[in-house]
Image (cartoon, rainbow, N blue to C red; front, side, top):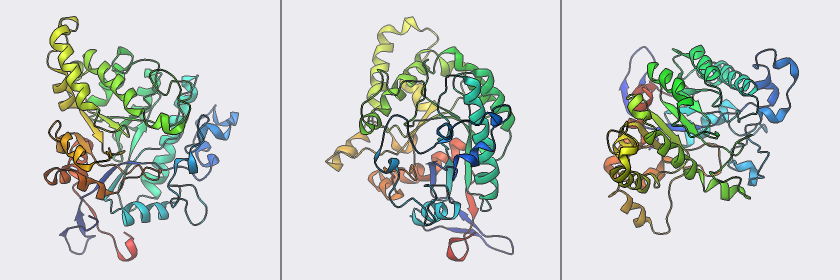
Length: 378
């Protein structure tokens, strides 16, 4: 799958077709001081603790190897996905990825939204200065605008700051909230994102700060918490549908990252059935919930469902069109990394769309990239 197709050659840099887009890669700073340098004043002078900027550890769970791939620590000891050269080797070289969407997990909900917004601002400035600029000579990295989920005005201010930047192509919201994301508090964010033609991406993590990790509280174990990501996404998605979000914002694009995908079909069945009987309660919901999900929502393949019998996964394709809903993700450098070869589990006709086409269309990505030179260098 790592092979590429030469589409242009000449005096200028050759271009190759984009065949694999990874929608979930997690860069981190080498040390908290690297990110701290980008915190705006007056917060920078207050010398917040290293834990505020920790994108790997969790104050709640001690996951084995900090939930990272064993081979993802760079030879010089840098944290996973902190060394750009080593990251390029593992993501572009070993996995054969053409374009990577960068999602730093350096922001967790905080009691004071101004503090959270300051860490968002630092994360965006750091990402732009490093991975989207200095480390992006090949042009294969794109990123999301991290915003505070708990203060709409602060979130919109941060989105407007980076609006029009060619490398920021989505808005990133932390889904650990105290309010379902279909409620009106979030509407200014959705309005601005649609006006700027940016998808809104939700991504989970192990450090929720002040917010609940599941709809009922905190799990005792990391693997228990990790297994329940889909419950939170299902709650937010049902809220978006029945609060009429997709009627109010008919061009809104939502991406649910790292929550699996098999759950969305039975959820849509249930929502459709309830809408048939109880739809008069929500007159602004003018069509079947499954139609809104079909038009407005995409999901990452990772973590891919792995039933004991592979043929059981194949039964899912009679319920949903994977070539329509799914976008490939590795979750590099985390322990449950999925290689592109995992997509071979999907129907052959859908594989091209899952690996690249859906992400190209949803994120408005280019269809070609610069070819790599000897030794995998651009």
